[in-house]
Length: 340
Length: 278
Image (cartoon, rainbow over all chains, first blue to last red; front, side, top):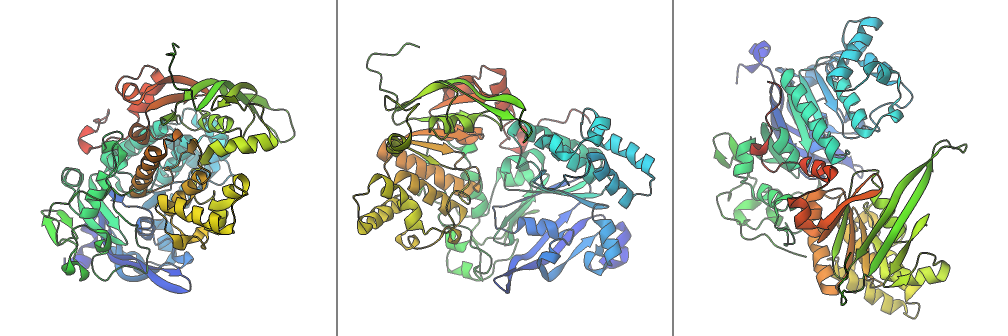
């Protein structure tokens, strides 16, 4: 990809390339995302899976260069939108990208909407910010968008305020807002976590249909393998700031390979024998600042040996596009500790 | 229901519980909303009875009524055969020794200004005033150890612990007075899946060791299937279906239960439904 910059027009992707980020903790900047590479392509859903504190939300926000005003710093790497670095864009261009070519759906439909503006005015605002439309055209587009996300009576909903809507309806409004300017990419950070299960299912179906119809490239950030199984085409598993395994969704579910992925999938009550003891990984995720130089998972890994104290490259194990950051991925896992 | 003669006495038994809340303007008025409507169940010794339902189903209100944290409008609560429906003040405090609660949010439910020794030992001050400082400290350390927390935790504060550790501390706080019943309100919902597995294993281990009865409130059917013996399904304040966990999952009768089960996340991408539209 040496001639990458000369053919920017041809490239269609939102890409993180070896991105490292640090966050301020107690007056110091500590690395929280460590050399992460991800590619979003039109028409595909990439599931970014990990537990809290692994850096997945920071990574997702970085795709729009958000979080910088909270002290998140780039330590290395790049973010490329259709071949162009987000770090070479001026503020105006960046603003037009956010909510324009790339938009976001957040977890909390309660806090992401402004309680003092009507639903209609919040959506038309986004439309008029990004598209060249007058008030009337924007209002018509809002009606259409609300229909597209399955709102029963769009005209009535436009006049309502967020507190009049249920959690599921608010999430539909947020999805409509995210679609307002016809984005090419969408970042969805735990889009269904705060919702009841029956509502979750409907929102998942809505997101999938919209993504397919509009050929969107989607980053789906989640802790939930069930959601990944429902929606993702590709999967990246994150642990302590690094991608530890990636591949397409069938590969990951058929043959989870990194010991962390295997443990994480094995300890779900969904796949357990009722009443049995769940296999668990001892200990807890190390916080940023206390990561090992070598494999970040080594201290909890039943397969770790002295070789794991040196840095391990992504793809140390690979089978085609299925890759893992592990030196011993071919070894059989002993029964994980059934502690407590 | 036919009750065999030698049936064990229910540790906790609630009959025909109802509770309404007034919803509406802060200036008064508003409409009365029935949060819990004629709910009855019995919790046997050593069993886990789950109450499942979505938000607003009344499951948490039911738990609070059973604990007498809320007063019911109608119905009765019996704890170990004794009617505690109207118990108050000191009498209720004494009875509460036998029924303790673990909350969902381990971040909100521990007092940030109290050391772990004080938080976990609080129940001992109330129920075992005869214990001196050293005895209390020893008992707290022992209970924390049972929950997988080392002695070094005693003089620390809640913010120095992770979510999973805080939930272990919350469980230790409930266990310290050696209750018969634990009411667990979404105890693993705020936790990561690997931590959730640790806590579920811990709850099973403690239950087996102490023959505890659990009233387990949850919206998560997979967790319920894993941990519970029997399930009550609540919808809009009422119990719509109940049964042994295996039966209810294999053969749900009520339409709402069927919907809930159908909405569960899939386990493998091969189980995906093909989209209706091409």
